[in-house]
Length: 194
Image (cartoon, helix red, strand yellow):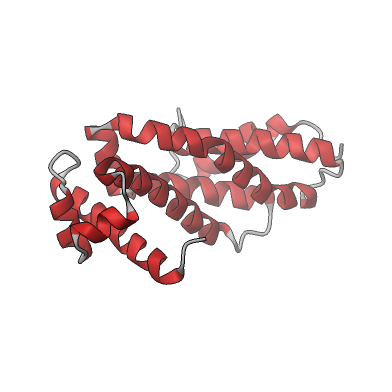
């Protein structure tokens, strides 16, 4: 486990990296620029990220990914029904993805930096979302534990897919999101009481 003071410096470096990338792009962001933005020396950066810039960029993608899901969880924590949590989650997540400036810049300039980190995070993210949805499925009437787990996995996969690629649905339109959730996502669950 990383000590709190060390974690604080690490986070400051990651936030400085994000600011530097937003200001100048990925290719123009040097360790010197990151040091200036984070208020740390290059030696401190290397102490926390011995792999240098590559390790730092990988850590930044993972950091923003975690931060995204923490914010998403906070945005839906007051939802009381399965429909409400999925609808709100889709709308908030879609908007947040568009607003993640640093990841948009990385995706535009050097998408190969995103892939390894996101691939490593994909299964844990899927499980995180499925675990989050499980109690809502129980309240929704899915009583059988195995069926609930299968439904949670299905819904998590669909939600993650629609967040970034909504297809014909406008995820900024509450009515379209409601239709997507009720007519496609929840309809795909089959009989609720299994």
